[in-house]
Length: 144
Image 1 (tube, helix red, strand yellow):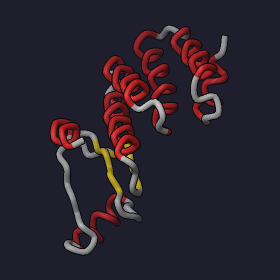
Image 2: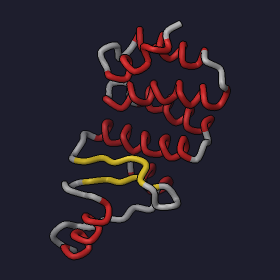
Image 3: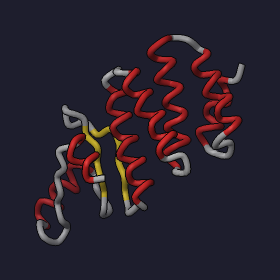
């Protein structure tokens, strides 16, 4: 976990008690209402993903990875985004993030190729995994 954070982020920590003024200022500026809150910002400072509350390690890593994938998607690097989303499904298949990652992997592939079979393949994949997730429902319109 530390390697992922060290190589992918510039972490900033503001402790609610140790630096109350900074916590209050940043809390208002960034809309932070609970601790811990982890924000994944892109290089322009735009929020791409938010994690609120404590999570077990695998769930946390999946969420952090989701933030990196969303940042790649937002800069239209759809090939990188797809790879990152698929890596979440492979590495953290039993987390809530996996279904979301599967959905966005299909969208990323479609955006990169304009080939609608990417969406159809994703809808079919939801027939095998994560059938009860909201992401499966969202992909159901892509069935061919």
